[in-house]
Image 1 (cartoon, one colour):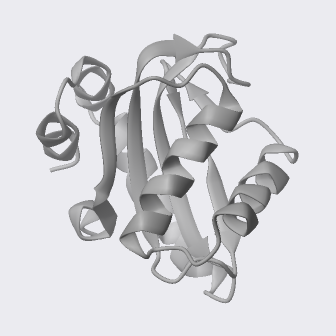
Image 2 (image 1 turned 90 degrees about the vertical axis):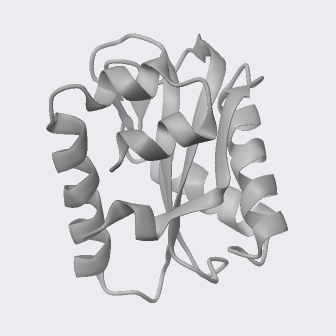
Length: 148
């Protein structure tokens, strides 16, 4: 799966000034609503929180992968945010997160699509240098290049 076909360039941002989960979710919802990828900011945000309540989405090394399966998603996509500063997040390694790879998936889509997408992202993150590129990114282009 070509991740660059799924990453929504209009929902990639660096130097985001978010200080907590609410502000991260607010930012991604604003970007996805403005772009037309979601139909309801509140509904998608609620679905992100529902998933967060089920377990940690921080995978470690400063990276988290929150995801929402929602009827509010018009177009399946991935948003990537790199915060100005790391923030506290529920992570596997107990360390703060700074890069957020956020999945927006329509609830009606088959689970195998979501699982294939998640597997593609996990495979990319496991490649040597990818996490470092994401953590060191200072532009939208840097982020996109990390997924090439």
